[in-house]
Amino acid sequence: MSPNDEALSSKIAPRETGYGDGYQQSVDIECRALFGMTPDEMYRRQTGLVTDSIPVSLYGEEDLKDTPVLGGNFRSALDVKAKKLGHIKKAPTLRQRARKAGIELVGSCDLDLGPGKRVLDIASGEGDSSRYLSTTGADVVSRDLSGSLVKKAIERDLEIRNGVREGIGASLGDVTYNIGDMGDIGRSFDDDSEKFDVVSCMGRSFIYLLTRENYESALCEYFDLLNPGGKIVLQGRECVKGYDDISWSEETKTGFGVDPESGDSAIKDLDSGVDFVWRKGEEIINEEGVKISKASRYLRYPDGKIKELKVVDSDEYFSLQHLDKMADMLKKAGFVNVGLKAQELSRDGSDIMFALVAEKPKPKAVGKMSAGFGRRILNRLRR
Ligand SMILES: C[S@@+](CC[C@H](N)C(=O)[O-])C[C@H]1O[C@@H](n2cnc3c(N)ncnc32)[C@H](O)[C@@H]1O
Image (cartoon, rainbow, N blue to C red):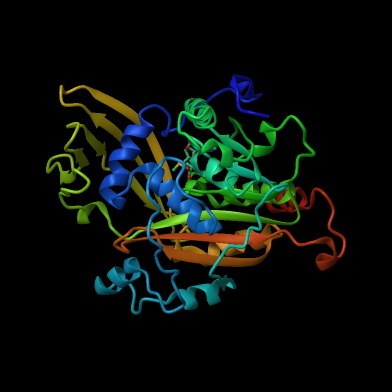
């Protein structure tokens, strides 16, 4: 089925997230400043590093140079910084973190995608990750909470397939876009017997579930949506470069400043004169020692007009520092063979893409595995 407006006739009413209106402009400014890339480039690169098989860009950009997969001796710059500040005695290696979490370091996520395979891409935004996954030939079902982003995804998809961008549309598998809440994804399907070979959540989107309880219940639901032997892949990012480290860049035409009175951080786009401002947000540390942050953002135009973007909630559960907690949640939901792939994302090595991949066991490996296993675990967790 090719995407059309009917895809929006979901049972779930369109609801906006902090990513709705103004998303493209804010992400564009932020990506150029933080990563030295356009958002298209960054999402392609992230998805490509996960699947190891994304062909040339859908948007006509040159292929990015390969960057190294990180090995066991790698130490995160955040940990190195924490050690310098005296917060920790020794910065652990990736191998030490993986061992503690009971996961394997892998060089590839081995999703085995191709024609005939079905992928559920969750929190898919404007559909970049979904389209890149579909370039493997797999059929992709795409879900995002934001109605305006789902609409945008459909428009962009049509543009590509209708040959506005010549020669690219031909390589795409089938993608269907619709609204869906990743915390209650089953509700966005008419047919509750839908099954997938891969469930993906790219672009670090998993963090917006925000609590351990939400993560655990969502993972149980994804487990039930997978075929036996199917894989889940959660892709994250470690921004080694904080806002404090961004300098004015001639190449990306972006610069950074902090308002001394409010403490708000602004990235300025030198070309358009638009400021992308993060208000200083609230931060709490929960009982598990995980940082939970809330911050609102706005765009300030050269004529002084302000466009408010909504509050974005995020947390640090899904980070290299808390690998053990994430691995624990995956295993509790029933997943096995949890692996971690980490690779440099940015050209200058200051940002890391990582992906946790895990498998739903095949029946013979677990004895009697029946439909509803994940839900039963979920009910047990809720008791
Ligand atoms: C950083 S974007 C990632 C886009 C996409 N995965 C990619 O890599 O191209 C984060 C996305 O998460 C979506 N999102 C946030 N909360 C969500 C929820 N509860 N359910 C579904 N999507 C959600 C936002 O609307 C936004 O599109």
